[in-house]
Image 1 (spheres, rainbow over the protein chains, first blue to last red):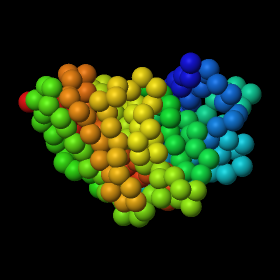
Image 2 (image 1 turned 60 degrees about the horizontal axis):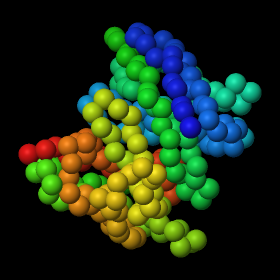
Image 3 (image 1 turned 60 degrees about the vertical axis):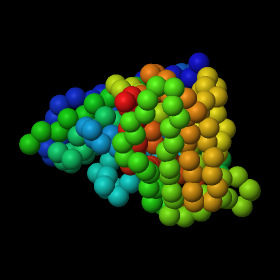
Image 4 (image 1 turned 180 degrees about the vertical axis):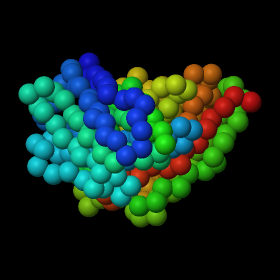
Amino acid sequence: QVQLVESGGGVVQSGTSLRLSCEGSGYRFSGYGMHWVRQSPGKGLEWVAVIWYDGSKTYYGDSVKGRFTISRDDSMNKLYLQMNSLRVDDTAMYYCARDRGVRAVDLDYWGQGTLVTVST
Amino acid sequence: AVMTQSPVSLPVTLGQPASISCRSSQSLLYSDGITYLNWFQQRPGQSPRRLIYEVSKRDSGVPDRFIGTGSGTDFTLKISRVEAEDVGIYYCMQGLHWPPITFGQGTRLEIK
């Protein structure tokens, strides 16, 4: 069965960096685009970033552009999110999600999330 | 595309129907004839789970009391008879006009 497991969250100070990981299993990881989606405490879902199945393209939400970098290592079945210059408003649960879509994004499986807390 | 859901909060009596509306600022009908609108359920303390894709197709394991309808820019998620396990927040999502991918603000379903 498809499983996505995030890790790397924690409590950090504003202005510092953190790298999140997401390990996929139960499917051919290299065949799917992958996304990060976050959810601030008590708030809704906000799309963060996407990486193409072959790593050839990446896109970011406006609030993280220039600070976050999405990448993947298909040999390890892993997705990453490098987060630099963290701000208090980056505090959120971060989910990775698989994209099975061809013509449109279709997030069919999600991980359980990893919590990032940014303090002043 | 901006996704607008209503209501924000939905108290429902067990066994009664429930309905959630989602409106997109742009048509979600693609030139292939498919309309790309998804619904997600987020139970308390859990990650989101896809319930419905392409407006009306239920994911495996999703009870048939969940029914997705709509076209173009207006969509509805209906629950024919609410059960206790349906408590949570429901989100619509569009992945056609992106970036960014956009979600509705969520509808919190609770038992009255």
